[in-house]
Image 1: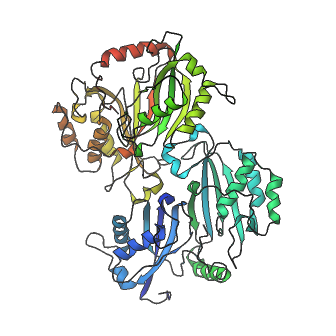
Image 2: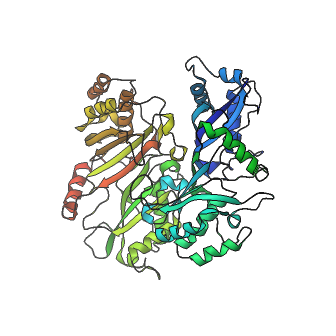
Image 3: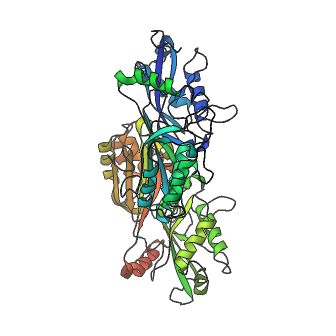
Length: 298
Length: 298
């Protein structure tokens, strides 16, 4: 089912959101409630007679981490796809979305089902992942209705200091001091953006919001970067301390990892159709060894 | 402790928020987790040697209903108030807020503690209560992170039809068709505002949001009004059906009550200091008989 040129097989793309609070992360594990486990069970239930369906995801989030625009794909025989239509919805894309809706729990929402473009791979075609981390550092902005996805911080944070800290770790570099070690895995990544703001309007008014975008993140990298820079923003640490980690070739013990519930995978960026297949091949070659283990990479 | 002129007693105002999802409503009940129960226990714990503290609240919300800016008051001996200061915070207002923070669960947040103005009564001084009700009527706007305070509606809603319906029930009238019956209780209220919108930006982008403001609401009134008008907005009912309830002198069985989790008490309006005491006396006289029972009045 990996031969995409075969007209007998179709690749289906899912765009979806989840509240990670009640999940043990993305990756399927026996006897644990995971997003992958719940979604694959739902898909296997509604697309019958094709056996167990396996998902490939763009961002393998950790336990407790949320996603607002996660992307995954799976392959099925064309005739199974065409069997998805039902009496009221002739379009298999809409029909499958409605069917999934009725079998999935409320903490996972499939927003869109579509036939993938030629050469699309949810994981290897992605050119960037964007995460956000939300913090309330004042009593006034602690909203109990949003406590499931906002960290409540006792100390107030200084946006300028946060951005000064973030700047020092942005760019193409070895993020080993911020990654959980994995054998044979590269920790070289390009962090395109790491910025902090305190919006004065909109959904995050008054909160402190970090935005991080990279080609990819290694395991616990987002939460380690946020933790390290937050300590600079609260005055607990300074830029000299932050820079001292550059010398570490592995995870620095002094870096605190912030809790998962403030973290949301917000967006996965894909190239346009023409570049899609070429990009997937390139990335697959480059990271095949690195990411062969099945550990989460946020 | 009701004699406010006595210099021995102070009245303390609390401004707070809660996620109603895990509470059996506001009013304290034996063996049930209620907001009043949890808050009174917390206050009694941090303000010692004054016995059990009793709260008077602006809006007695039902089970599952949330509040973003709820207001309550309690009376304590002045010396107990002054005893609240601690080594780090000399101001009793800040000190009490910090103390409450450490004993209250995360689904209640006391945002402000202050000495009440002369004549202030959280319930009887209030001139208006404003509620909002949030609905997602499209797959695209179903956000699992906000499912605890947004209703997911299968049918799409028409804002114009919703507002046409809302207009017919606005004003000073007998809301008996929309209220759960209570002996000796008046159901005459003034609904200042009942409007619907679909914001194109901000925290509620794409959602359908109802705003209702009245001098006060009787039990289940907000959720019955939203339910009746939502049926007009989805095309299930029409304005003629809505108008037919005007003839009912008690609760209409055909009106559906929407679930509590979409409902948030957003704001309680108080007059300025000069009017405060006069207003409380007026309201108390007017509603003393009506509201003597202790049923929730949203």
